[in-house]
Image (cartoon, rainbow, N blue to C red):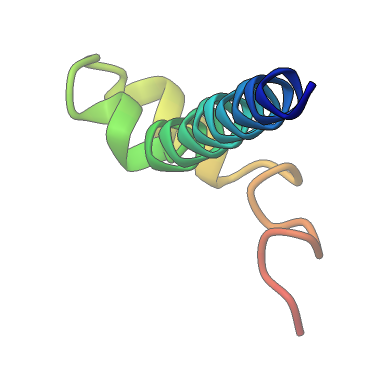
Length: 66
């Protein structure tokens, strides 16, 4: 019976570790790739980017806290 409990504990710990790495890795990748600078590093969008800078969406309170 002790052996079965150890396997359950081991499987649970491995599952938690895999979940933690998956969610943490996903969050880290999303954080790194969600910036405007990252998008502009591959895509040529100079005119749309300039229009975006002049819009209300670029200067909202969430993006630039006061």
